[in-house]
Length: 190
Image 1: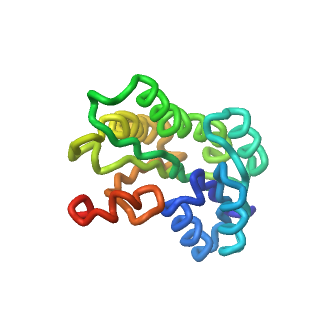
Image 2: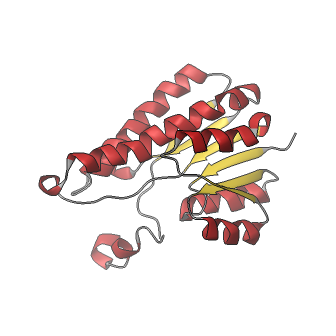
């Protein structure tokens, strides 16, 4: 059996770094994203497989997951936008969209891969943000949905033990395309 790791958001800075590391460690990463051109380029760069998938489409998630049915030993969910604005300027739809992408997307990906992860004593890696525990200005939208990820992590770690390990990392800003505007400002970067 190949040790396949599904990396949703595999073309982003964090997801692609995980893919490269897993490849070096002898695993078989499959990078998954909506952007086919980026997928092709990055998959070729490290010699891995790729799949296109919109995580807001549960049928697409199911189709991708079924392709690797019994071979999945790990899952990394590195998807999620950073929507920053003051609460007074936020709209209900922005909170709902953030929850759909960051939280419900992760739930559907996990559900679709649960049989394989259980069979293979797999591992799930989710991502939050340091803003959930620290509290940062203008982070109410992303912190709400990523806070739900932290709660989900604790719940699933208990529910899936000892068959599946569930962990969550809460990084600060990373030097990526998504955070380019923020890290280019020295005050914000500090």
